[in-house]
Length: 528
Ligand code: GDP
Image 1: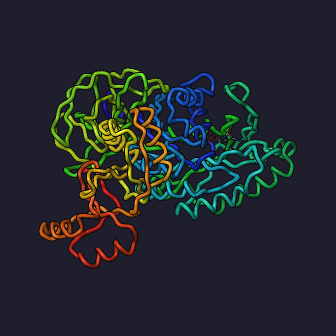
Image 2: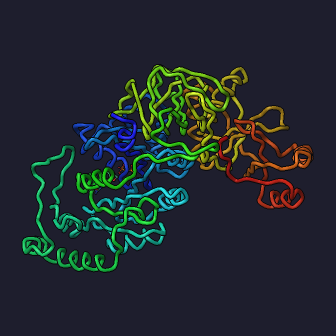
Image 3: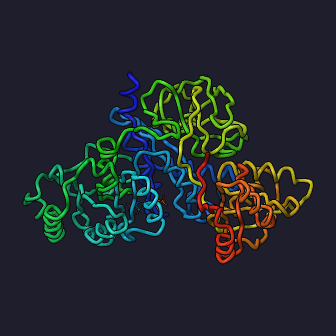
């Protein structure tokens, strides 16, 4: 198959939601409908077995949140679909932002009882900033939920984009009859289902005017019909360009747990979501079907498999064809590597991979040579933009309980820092004690757990007087030098040795800004 054809049949998307909206359930059902798994329950089961084998996942279990993002690949209707899971909890939003840099579209899951929740809002802002096309799935119609029209206007006001319903619910909760497919002009009748799909049992009623719907669903039908007529008159037509530009979102209603509405979403991903497009590098625009391979590390995870203490770098292929055993160059330092045991994520098993194309995610086990934001090529020097690190808002000092384990503490923190699980700062003054910076409190707990279980280090975390950090740069090296020598007590270096100014209050930062107009302070750092 030609490179262009391979690119054209790829769909790479992230699934985003506030915790508990039904992301895990929908993910599992998408795999089920794509034929990647036979019985729903395996995604959850896999979660459970990870819990059993790794202590830090205890935190996830206890709090019912998903800490680590993962990748799943499936084939459906001659398309290769790469689905990237994201952690729902806001304390891990940095990880989610980075995952969103690796996708071409997002599927947003909304709990119909709760509408647009805080975490969804934050994620949407990132999608909006990147003009990522968004498909919307409104879940849990089998419950008594909010009015569909209200949900639509809430989404519109938060997204700042038009909603275009592709389907419409007939009733909800106990009176839920099914959803009417507005485009095809037929109603799919609801049937509670669980683990398997039952193609042969699907029941449709053709036509909005069909007396059969009126007879069976009475008031719910009358209301749905009125609403459908209203939105047909008031909503804009679906415009594919507007969707691709992040200006319209197609909306689907359903109930993931009952397998209901899942088929429609899967088909929409194939039919509407874009295939991988060009990616902007500092040097030039990279086309997905160029013959030469390039890819970016957007996530690093240490010790995924406790049996092999490896680190896996997740690489999104940007162009060309990846082949196992090919020689690759790391653009950051020119080092070469020839990865042989590269893994794909087909049907969620870590399998050895032979080839991959733009849009695919490959996992490269390594011992620390690959870092977040690294670009791999066949030799060309390329730097992609846009992998964000956010200035931490919470700080804790870290000390090891047993001084003999100091070295392990350093190793653990370096690895966890490079993975992006936490930011590690080395203060210029202060006798070598390290400072941890996080965007969310839970990150500290996860790091403390992981230091203990993966590196055998009991760390003591202590309050720090800082609560703000800003990376800084200056055009004039003399100004930079003067600023740094006068503020040595407040300067620390991060994992890539970028200097940051630490402050204990916004006022302190303001004073520094006023005193040093030649210094630029940055709340975000892009890798590179
Ligand atoms: P996540 O945190 O977004 O991954 O959410 P989960 O998929 O774990 O689902 C959260 C809860 O909602 C679980 O108890 C699910 O069983 C439940 N749930 C998911 N989909 C539906 C649905 O369509 N209807 C109902 N009633 N419950 C659902």
